[in-house]
Image (cartoon, rainbow, N blue to C red):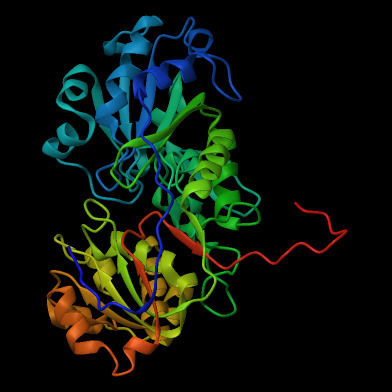
Length: 423
């Protein structure tokens, strides 16, 4: 979607540094499997194993599986595990099951034909095994098939996440393979019990001290996956980084790589911002696209006018998420304190943002639904700008964030004083 703005605006365009694509993804995968960080090589771990389970993300994430998942199967074959001994497990958390067509598209026809693909159901209590409890009081119920797997490999992509800090690593297991009760309790750690709002430690780009992340790590440490393969994609959906090894180690290294390119300091927040949600599949639904809006907050002044572009061709999301649409912010906060769910957190975040900022949404959602979420609806960006810009717009500070799905604006770090230790 092209946008032409007048010359002479006080404008900054915020984007990450270009991430070059890996020249050979499969070669990098083979190197990583032969010499992983924090765990034994594939040749050692696969020795004397009769089966392997690979946890994969679902249709809501683009991890470019077509580029490297077939080669992962090939490498398992070369180390004594035929396709008949390998299963894919879709770690979908609370998401709906994938269709056959979606599986073929996401994992390739080749993979779909070669190995058995298992679906996760967070409400299938007869398949869940209780394995322990975290320090945060989360009772861990995980699919018995995951717990019984002889050789467990996690996969996924590392992106900014609005309350886990980053996706990737441990997130393939929690929420990916756990029961709803476990997922809900973990996610409830994002909420400040006194205020009904988000805990200030819970935010994109935060791992250390983030209770949601630390609880997820404890879940993963009790399940003890054998290996993790994570990727980072650039804005062209090409693989720019691929890491193999211990899930915690790879998460930290992948997060550091992402920050190197996509963590952007904002010297002065904007009065007016144009924010893009990143395109398919990141803007399939309001539930998915909301993350891009939340990522932009450090680039905005209080009360800023925000033009948010997200197609939302599949609507808002689940019926449960839609049930929050008409609530005012205080009603949303009260409901969150008595009714915890993933959809509750997203709704609370969205309601908080639309209460603090003047958000104009360019999407395919019906206008009346957009208004009920607290935003002003528009059919295209030019209509939005023509109708909503203030008369003094030319004298205000502008920011354009073409793809904020995996960009994290942040306030500048304070300068280090002489004699002060730099961390």
